[in-house]
Image (tube, rainbow, N blue to C red):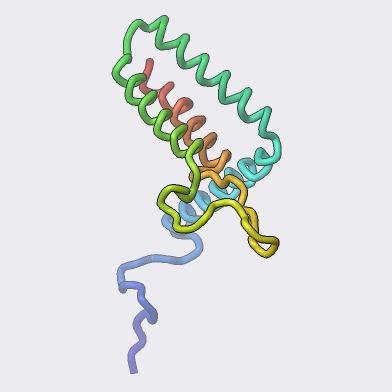
Length: 139
């Protein structure tokens, strides 16, 4: 009978609760859970999120102006933000490519409102994080 470790772990793996790998794994899980909780709390506060995002973008622009550099990074950031804006403003389904009428023609047809390809939160979050992370580049 075999008395070695069972399961998918290798014999050299130490996955006890006090091992450094388990401690780091628990810590990263806890940090990511708290971060997700903070993000979930910001969802209903649309105006406050956008005001904060505008403040971060303005601080970044002023910082780039005073540093007198990093225009290439800012140019790339602008292209990425325009890509996000295009996804935010475009419909999920292209009406020209869809077969049939787009408006209801009888009482049983259901009207489908404008559905964005990129929801508002998924537009705001990358914008905020990219601008906030660019502060590390501009020092």
